[in-house]
Amino acid sequence: MVNIGIIGVGLVGSELISQLSAHISQNGTPTFKVIALMNSTKQLLSNSSYSSLTLSSWKNDLSAKGTTSNLNSFINYLSEAPTPSIVIDNTSSQEIADSYPLFIEKGLHIVTPNKKAFSSDLKLYREIREKAAEKRRFIYHESTVGAGLPVLSTLTDLIRTKDKIIKIEGIFSGTLSYIFNEFSKLDGEKKNFSEIVKIARENGYTEPDPRDDLNGLDVARKVVILSRLTGKDLSLDTLPVENIVPESLRTLDSATEFMASLTQYDEYFQKLNTTANNDQQVLRYIGVIDPIGDKSEVKLVSLSSSHPFAALKGSDNIISFTTERFPSPLIIQGAGAGAAVTAFGIFSDLFKISDRT
Ligand code: NHO
Image (tube, rainbow, N blue to C red):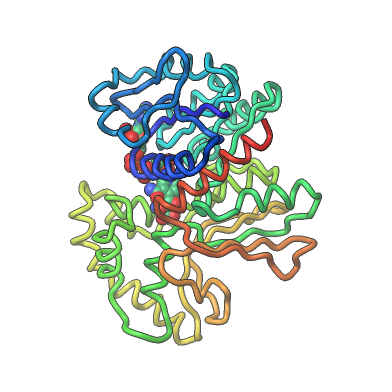
């Protein structure tokens, strides 16, 4: 039996608890037991015999019986439980990411969709990797790239079996995938760029402020994560990233002002699109990982309509691995955004650890 403590019970964390709950109720001898939950204000720990929390009423229990959040007491409780124990970080907190070395020190395995530990400070990244190797603890973060798509596991398998990675390219943002799939196509109804961003925002596909998607930082983090896995120590401050938020709109105070002003740039984006379409091409926002040279980047490109990235639908992600064994690239494609698939990626990581402990 694997003990689990969950930090972060928002969109993804709640969905993960539903998936875990379904697994636990359908299995006579479930593999996992959730013994601790925490959000930014409250935490709920089970008891001194580390029995399972009642997942059907976790929300009420957390708000009615929860005590004030305290990361140290949470981690101490989890680390004193019979091993193995996994801490799941479902936050986007840098503070929690900075604590991973401590979690490992305390004997915990880690699973997370939080990109911060793997794409921020290189020193932290190295410390986590070294400590995990030294203490023989596992860290899985499949959902940091492509949500639940098997992107990191595939790359790890390619590397472990000594294939040579030549290039990785992809559409890594569900939001930007949706925006450009809708905006830049050869057939069908053409809409203004601002209108599509507005629809995406209204449907909850973008961050509350869409500039946080359009600035490319989320894609840049994913490129850094993949690059570091290939052994190339890329950092956010050296990676060229094309920020497609028009310069004059970057300093506007609110998302509302930004949305209102984006219409001024419809003609600019339309021109880019028309130029591409005239050559039977479409616009796509891609990340490129170059493990051999220095050409990793994040940018808006025009791609031929026959390119596999051109045929993408909705908010799907697509990731293409060109390697010595796969000169014709190995391509992974599918839903790359949303709580259900992100939680699936986390859940499958839990099984990887339970299989190995
Ligand atoms: P929420 O809903 O804001 O929940 C965060 C939770 O963490 C809350 O319970 C909050 O109280 C708690 N929390 C924050 N700071 C804390 C602290 N210091 N101590 C304790 N608790 C703390 O966030 P989400 O949406 O559930 O996201 C959670 C993590 O998953 C983030 O790292 C996020 O980047 C990652 N993630 C989310 C999604 C998603 O569907 N929301 C995706 C991938 C990764 O594939 C998904 C996606 O859509 C990706 C993207 N939008 C794209 O490709 O376009």
